[in-house]
Structure formats: C-alpha cells, structure tokens
Image (cartoon, rainbow over all chains, first blue to last red; front, top):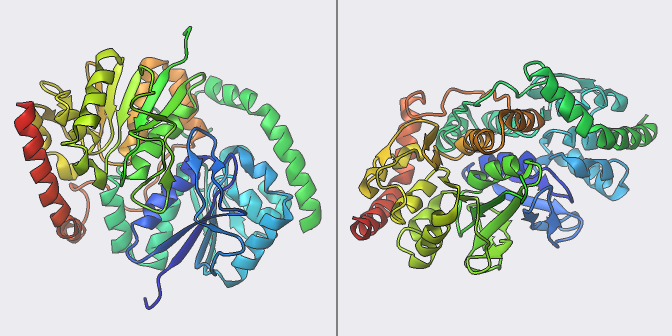
Length: 228
Length: 228
C-alpha cells in the first residue's frame, strides 16, 4: 500500500466507550494505519463512564477517510437529528472505501440515509428501529453488505474490526492481531444474547432501558421522516 | 451494600488501552460502583494508540479501593522497577478486597511482591516470566486464587471483569452486563491462542516482539532480585 490506511472513529458525548475502544485496539495494530478520533471540536468529550475521550481531529480538519466508523451508546439519540454530524457522515461516505458502525451507531448511518437498501446489524435492543431508515435489519454479529459493514452490540465491535481487517488488508494480519489480543473468548455465563439470557435478566434490562428506548424511538421517527 | 464499591484501574503511558477499557465497561455498569482511573499525576497520558487517557485521581488522592486492577501493555516494563508505582500497589493491596490484573499487569503485581505463592494468569507471551516473582503461572483465561484475580491477555479482561462482578456482587448483575454488552463472541478466525493460531502467525508475532521481550526480561530480572 503506497499511502497509509486512514481510519476514523466518531467520538461523541455519552458514547459507549467499548463500542469504539474494541475496534480501535484492532485497527491500531494494523501496520501503517493512521487512526483518527473525530468530533465537532477538539475538546475532550465525556463517554458513558469516567473515561474522557480526547478527539484527535475535527469534522473540518479530518482528511478523507478510507474507513469511517460510528460507534453507539446512549449518546446516539442526539446524533440522529444533528445535521452537522449527518453531513459529515454523508461527505465522508462518498469517498470512503468502507462505511461502518458498531452497536447503535448504525442508527446514525441510517439517519444519514446511508443504509437505504442495505442489510445492517445493530444492538439487539435497536434491531426493530433500523428498518425505519430503509435498511434490512439482520441479527448477525457482523453484517457485510457491499461496503457497508456493521456490527452488533458493544463487544461485537471486536469481531467486526477483525473481519474488516481481513477484508481490507489480509487474513494473516487479522489473525496476528487476534493472537496479540489473545482473543480466545470464554464468557463465564451464557447471557450474551436475548436468545440465551435468562428471562429475568432480559426483563431487567428492558425495564431499566424503557425510558431511553422511548426517547430513542422518538428520535428515530423524527430522523426517518427526513430520510424517506 | 451501604457504601459504593470503589474500583480503581491504573492508567500509565503506553498501556494497551483495551486491557482496561474492557473491564472498565463491565465495572461501570455495576449499579452504584465508583470508578477511578489512577496515575501519578492527573495530566493525560498516552496509551498504546491515538487514545489519550485522562486520570481521574492521583496516587496521593486515591481513596482506599475495594478493587485495584492493573492492566498491561508495552508500558508495563517501566512499572516493574518504579518504586512509586509499586508502593502504591502494596499500600492499596493491604486494604483492598480484590487485587487484580489483566494481561501483563500481573507482572507489576508480581514486582510489588503481591503474587508470592499465588496462582496467576498473564498474556501468553509473558507466562514464563511470572514465575520469577514467586507466582505459579497458569494458562487459564481467568485465574482466581483467594483474593488475587488475574486475567490473560488483553480481551481476557472482559471475561475477568464479568467473573469478578459475579463474585463481588452477584451472578444476575454479571449476566445483565453481559447481555447489555451483547457479549456473545464470534471470532472470525481461530487464532486467539498460541495453541490454535497458525504457526506462521505465531512466528510473525514472536519475531516482531523479540526486542520488547528482551527488554521485558531484563526489567523482570531486576525486579525479581528485589522481591526475592
């Protein structure tokens, strides 16, 4: 490769940090890749926890990316009707080789009109919302449809990123990163999907998430009116 | 629980960020937990990638923790003979309920004399070094020996943290976090352990890591002389 791969990840207030720190770890181990953490301004933004995130570039200063990746989380709701964010995503998507997301980041791609007619994945709690943007929601952990590559919830970002590296670089590079990260997972419980989690655990999360879910649905509906 | 769980993660220059952002995601979803990112000074420190880490407290200001967790990475080498770091770990370990690490963070626990006579895990590339600190290295992904809980390399931090939450809170809380994180892993390749990775991939990493490995061994030997 003559010029470095330019890989950019959106960081925004109340992003679920593991949505992007997982893929960031994978991408930062690609020899020669140049990584960007992108937001409107360069000032640190709060994540969903005590971790503060410091962008490395702004929408205005960001070079054309080969990969644009949008993570998700509670803060996603505020992206869906933010024209400055959606414009940036559309502009980058025109020239990018891969337009990607992790978790509910796919809702932002959808709100930017970038998933019309594409299959796409998202966090299990948002799977029914994706269709409102003209996407075909899929329950796979990683979804590859032409140059749209989307991951499921949070930790799916690691599987997503390894898949993307194998597509855009090669399999050996992805395998070397997997070994370096000792990504040989052994979850202590079998609760990682709504299909396998105990019913009371699923009910607990649905109850806890109900308020956010209502706000999200409202933001999705408003955004979907613009897209369709 | 009457007072919040105090959970602290060490952040230091050239830490492998996923070593601690994985556990951080898990811990930050424990209802009522108070998280701390700890270093000598409060100024941002560089991780192993473009992500800059902003400590939330200093060694001097950090309260007594219930859980102290040391992540690993390239920067580990510089911790092993740093008395300010080792003193902080020893002081916290006296009052902590759990003394923990992810990846090569266990070398720092060892250098602080905190693993003598304990079984412990670490990144596959460092497994033979742990013994120098009087620990009994184990190749498990998560190792629980009394109140020393140590994880294997990088992504093992997620399995480690879910295990710890189930021990210190309860299983349902851990399962709810696993579901929220959609931790239902599906690695695209089978290269996550030296036992399963293609031989040429393992050889590639051993070659690339040789210089760091030599420096690490030197730092371990120097630290081990003090401990024994």
